[in-house]
Amino acid sequence: MTEISPGLENVYIKYTELTYIDGDNGIMRYRGYDINELAEKSSFEEVSYLMLFGELPDEKELSNFKNKINNNLKLPDYMKNILKNLPGEADSLGILQTVLSARSSIELNYKYSEKNDKELIPEILGNVLSIVSNIYRIKSGKAIIDPIPGKNYAETFLNACFDKTDDQKIDAIDAALILYMDHEIPASTTAALVTASTLSDMYSSLVSAVTALRGPLHGGAAEGAYKQFLEIKTPENVEPWFKKNIIEDKKRLIGLGHRVYKTYDPRLKSFKKYADKLSVTPEQKNILEIAKKLEELGVKTFGPKGIYTNTDFYSGIVFNAIGFPLDMFTTLFGLSRISGILAHITEYVEKQEKLIRPRAIYNGYDKREYKK
Ligand code: SDX
Image 1 (cartoon, helix red, strand yellow):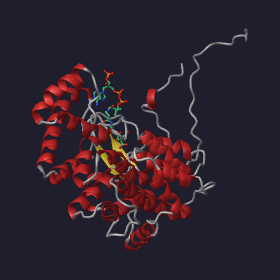
Image 2 (spheres, protein in one colour; image 1 turned 90 degrees about the vertical axis):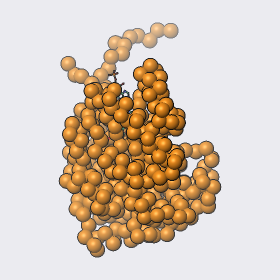
Image 3 (tube, protein in one colour; image 1 turned 120 degrees about the horizontal axis):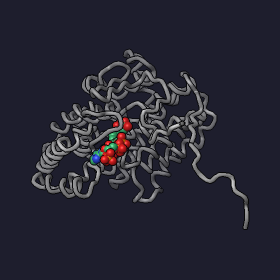
């Protein structure tokens, strides 16, 4: 009897050399390198190159890659006009999705090849840095600008967003962009693969991914977790809040649980390090204390069911400490994930290229006559 697998749980649709995840032991590696070691020692563009082209770049390769990205920081006027004319209440990730969709409309018949990818992908990374930083600027009432290249992608990005920043925040966002870069094939990457498997272009595949990422069960969790901390207000209120909302009302504790991890999400190690380092104001320290108490209670309650803290529980604290408001959290996740999604798309299309077309088991009416 053919069975369905709800949510495609434990269904494998591709081989990958990109990200290794051991959900039982909380291990995660990008092309063999430990995720936390890369977050500490590498940079967003170096890890992007590793994921996209297979090996860590040498000095010349890295410099060429960075130059190509920096040559694409200036957005074409039509993208700037979209950014200017979307309604103020448009959500950040929805704006990114809209601008990428406009770009996809002029990218038909893309021919996937390593040569073409090496040209188009730096354009996408440069454009997306500029789109996301200008989304933040518009929502903060600032004018659209063309980002000025800094020492690396992380610095270019923060300098484009804020009038001033510092090295600790640049290191933190660089680490965050590495940590969120890929995670095998979550819902958003799977959505991109479905689109790419039809040989639709890269931008259209990214639009599919971004629309999936917007859901609260996926990319929206960093914002959802942080909203819990704000709602709780004080460390003393953690227990009563948990009892009412999670135990009695049976709400999901956002930032806990994962389809793959049945122990702590390995990315937490770096995010918690930066959350501790960057939480310096009384408000930030209060939120951090609430988060730690809530995590302890959540793991005590759900740990026996294999439900532990995931990366989204602390990433919002880091994003907020760097200076970003809640509605930018998922968009920052999206900025980072673009590289990983593009790596999966090129790996899939250039190696396997099977149209993704699952089946459904029909359990509706048998044949019946049309009578009126
Ligand atoms: C990300 O896939 C990825 O890799 C995603 C991601 C990435 O990098 O791309 O890692 C990023 O999306 C991380 C996950 C962020 N989402 C959240 O934090 C939202 C809260 N988490 C859950 O909704 C849940 O854990 C999921 C959706 C993430 C995964 O759930 P599954 O595997 O689909 O399992 P399920 O929803 O069927 O839950 C199984 C049981 C249920 O209880 P029972 O009905 O069996 O009694 O566990 C319970 C659930 O109610 N449960 C939770 C819970 N998570 C699962 N109960 C309370 N709080 C939770 N957080």
